[in-house]
Length: 223
Image 1 (cartoon, rainbow, N blue to C red):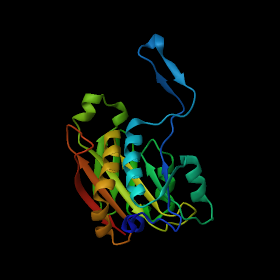
Image 2: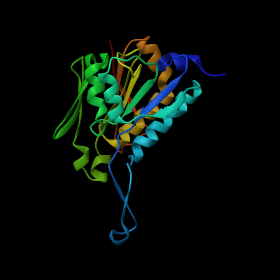
Image 3: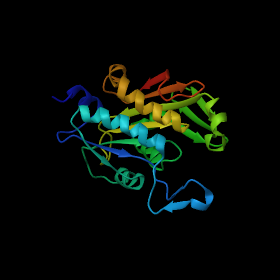
Image 4: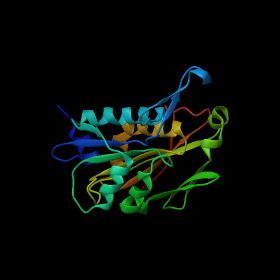
């Protein structure tokens, strides 16, 4: 028996479908040494994004949802269209995912939060709170692990456009993106109780040494 309360929280339709939108990278270099390196001849995905998506897929499977993938470009085109649809989409990643800006700009989530990317990467919530991390793309692995990272789990059901309901699972750094997926899988019921069917954005804090399994709920805003 599938869990209908998860289905309601995720905004799944009569034919429950959830689409995972992960950022694509044009190429990946692999090999044990520089001399042995080769370029993978297709799009590649970031490990932390995939791990995050795995946790969300497990949650969706408890609701009996069919799981598909949708590219950032395809999701952006749907948000620009006037067609209607019933699939729920989940956007993973922050700066790396070009669909994030379109999601925040075309849904009620724009009233809850925004991201800024410069020398600092910043999450701002509608209550004026601010959460930041030095540009993680310029930090070494050890330097990043010694920082405090932040991420957002946000959602709105019955969003305008053909994407149906929309969720965002986005860390400033990669470990926070993975941790946000873990949090959504484990704490969806608490989020559902807080949101009461309204759009929400929950900020998670990841203290050093950053561990995706260990987060603290820093703030929740509702619209």
